[in-house]
Amino acid sequence: MKTKLCGGRVFHAGVFENACSVIWENGTVIALGAECDGIAVDRELRADGFLVLPGLIDIHTHGRGGYDFSTATADEMRRMKADYARHGVTSLFPTLASATAEDWIRAIGAIEECGFDGVHLEGRYLNPAKRGAHSAELLAPLHAQELEEILSRVSIPCHLSAAFELDQDGSFAACAKRHGATMSLGHTAATAEQAKVAIERGVTAFTHLFNAMPPLHHREGGAVSVALEGMGYAELIVDGLHICPAMVRLAYRCLGKDRTVLITDSMEGTGCPDGVYSIAGQEVTLKDGRARTAYGALAGSTLDLWDGVKNLMRFAGIPLEEAIVCATETPARTVGIFDRVGSIDVGKRADLLLVEETGLQIRKVISAGEPVDGKEETK
Image 1 (cartoon, one colour):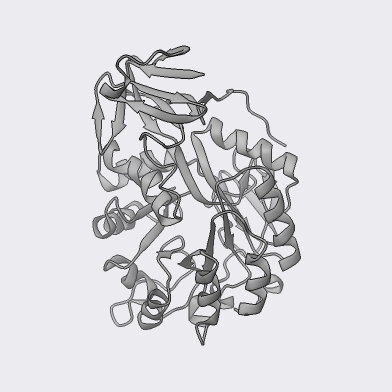
Image 2 (tube, rainbow, N blue to C red; image 1 turned 90 degrees about the vertical axis):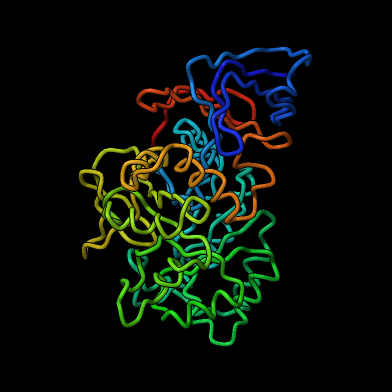
């Protein structure tokens, strides 16, 4: 079945194109703009008065709706996948917090069964001094042999966050690189020099910049200075809590749209009432939208990625044309999936958002060519 979307202002190649049409078939875009002329279609959708954006991509999210990817069943993951789509996220890398290797392997199997675009391993291989909400009992040394056992079970794109300063001989990073995993420095106490060594070994990103790493200091800039001076992509949690607006603005001035990766780092309480939840082997309390461990550490966020886009516009004083790239193209490039998602282009998956020009509310989500049901489910 060929479907044509017409009448909207389509975001393509960095600008909004007026009254631009998009045609897709079997979930894949086959024509755009003038290419649509003369193509017979089976179904036509109108987007008059709307902005048409690529579907959002969240490469760092632990869960929502009462479920956590580390412990959820395949059926529960499918419910989560649908809930993400209802909130505009049509591509995501389910993120596994610290757990045993066996639990990771089980969760990876369920993630692959559910057809997610990839998986993000953020746990186990962290610096104990910067573990944040991750249970100390679930941390492990950066042993290449264990990583080999895990990655040999992964058949989808994999993104790996670790404290690579603890990879003394580089064998851990070499194993990840051999398996094609993209690597990110996170939960780290790395000095600037150690961060540069990690980059030489294949690290291309920084996990939730500023959080779970030493603060920027004028005598030792650490990982933050290396990220800001132009080396690699950098995740930002733009909820106004994890990073204050002024620091978001400063970071964006250094990183720009091509290196800023908006993430949520959301946890299972996202979209749920206040209460007691868990992450990375620890109980956390959610109150007024803030999740904290018993000792007061932030335990992920309850941010929706679209709110992060609007927050970035406000905090950094930038237009939607820049902010949307940070939640679509740049994360896709970070984890190596820009060939199939992250922009509205021929040959890519038909993941689209119809957004009101005034108020920027998402009014319709199209995932793989099909409108998403607006009914919400939570645990």
